[in-house]
Image (tube, rainbow, N blue to C red; front, side, top):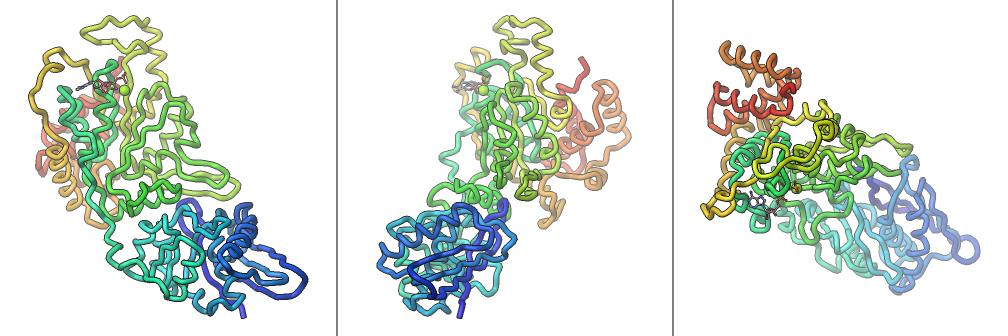
Length: 512
Ligand SMILES: Nc1ncnc2c1ncn2[C@@H]1O[C@H](COP(=O)(O)OP(=O)(O)OP(=O)(O)O)[C@@H](O)[C@H]1O
Ligand SMILES: [Mg+2]
């Protein structure tokens, strides 16, 4: 009789359950193994690794012809996670333990030739899948993936094993599963190791803009001379953002797990990601790609910050492909292997100098650029991209007084407290289970409902539209920012000051 077990393969960042059946027929001379069910090269090679691991661990390989079937047959099976379940099926076929133990188990792990088990990617998604499936009661994962698998520890027996022998012992109930409370995974970020806002001197306007951005999830661009603190400010953004909700933590951690880059020993990400790709990044690196598409930088920044430093240095085509994901929070990649959609709801912070030499408008240095050079430099950033950035912030070099000042500045914790309060207002407004989590995600219906302007404010914004040539998108974005400024002030309605400040952040839209 054939007793199946199961494992998983990743499709994008989603785990798909794969059924594994082994038929050790015993017929024929010697040992021959055939794997069917659309295996990739790593899966086909598994039979060699498995045979070596079996012998090294003191087990037999079934004699004669053995057929291994991976179902469903029409899904490509990738990676080395099938080594362990196949090896356990083969051991069961030699009657080393009762095969029925395999039926309710999900098993994953790559085997080394000596029978030790190597980590695999995507264990978090697999553990969440196992947790959802009623008939899976046992989960066996590599020891190095223990923390990701712990999300399932409260609802099933989870074993983190280091060797093939240990995996057999786990199935036979000879070792203890992970404690159910190891599933307490949502830890407060370790703020000690996040750079603090108070280290930045001066730059009050830029700090205010970052506070608004963090409170409402808005995009920011800094324009200023070299050494004025643009990169320094951006790096401090994760410290003032509210901690992720449990749902956000799982979403983001799943993406990092699929690439195998969760911090070692940490079950789930604790703080919002901060991704800062170099300007030489390719569009596949930024958006995601590959033959079997994997998430790119924008998805790794999901629920966190994407920092594009030296924005005009990025290749134009790379920046242009950002336009659609910036609007939708999703990126779809189509390849021969299929079409994959990854979440990418990130907060964009961009930084640039005002001109190639960096000193245009600087009080302390003369700019040496010709006006054509300045125009060409700025033209590298398209209007539609700028349109999607809510807060345009000019930064000036520090004065010597500011530089030498030792006056204490506000800490990240103080700013964060205000951002958390503003987000709580937003959560109450949109509802806990709404797809809209912050003001920057408001659609037309919410804009009409929550950003109503009285006639006086309407005439003010009409004036701005005509004066600065604002687009319809810029208009909507001003309303969203004004709503966030009002929330930070704890105000029910958008007032004249709130709207005025929001319009002031559309610097780069101004004609000429
Ligand atoms: N406002 C500031 N407060 C304290 N230190 C600062 C400030 N601005 C700059 N510095 C110091 O200068 C260094 C460089 O700053 P930063 O890299 O943020 O400048 P930048 O504006 O990004 O410059 P560039 O345009 O060359 O990238 C910082 O590491 C810090 O030591
Ligand atoms: Mg910089």
